[in-house]
Image 1: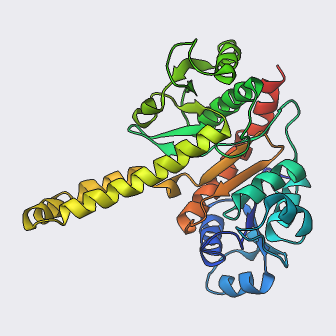
Image 2 (image 1 turned 90 degrees about the vertical axis):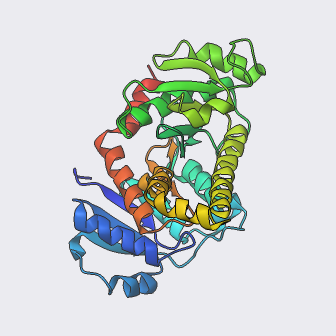
Length: 332
């Protein structure tokens, strides 16, 4: 492949496919020097493309006759639906015909397909799913949150290294602070997993700040939050649910009286800024770190803005040579 980034996208995955997927892709090819491959039902994709103006040399379609549904068993779906938009797209990445693959489809299937089809970087024991979660100062990278429910200390040690590389090179955080989720900040706290992981992580060439508690997360005290996927998924889902419920409570209270409604009107611009700070579409999706190519899990309800942001992630990933950096760091 040449210098121009080639991004393959699952056009059929997610709640808003293919309309929002195509729209975000068009915005990207019209603004960036890239090539995009839309994978999925050719007739449906072509129908959507008729509504836009773009350079056809920068966008192509690879037909896939099947779609993996959310309720399907991930591993079985990957093995049986070989002509699904997800499997075809992952094989494009595996065969080096694309630099990154983006899907808003089934998380389980994407994790299974990424591991089985794309394969791990040499030296990486397990890949990890690493979404950004909001905090008081911006966002933190949560790694792992879905790929490894049962982890070993060595996995967490590698997660710390991969997360540090990603935050520094993709998010622009200089010398990112890495924290290990635990029930207390003391080194001796926790279970066998966290105690052994702590000992491994303090020997790494990263900015390891030690243990952090869950209450530290909203304050942004760590740029990279390391944990096993069972813990990470609970943190992620609680954060999403709490954020949505909090906004609902605020809305109910503000609409409770005439005086509070006036106050809400006066504070409208402030609320918009707060909402913007929690907007996941600004950052695209969750990268699956540790694979031989970039796989990005976009949110299931991703709009065109989120897809555009995920494409930009893919571009940066290639430019910063993240795969090569991870391989070099892990094998030092």
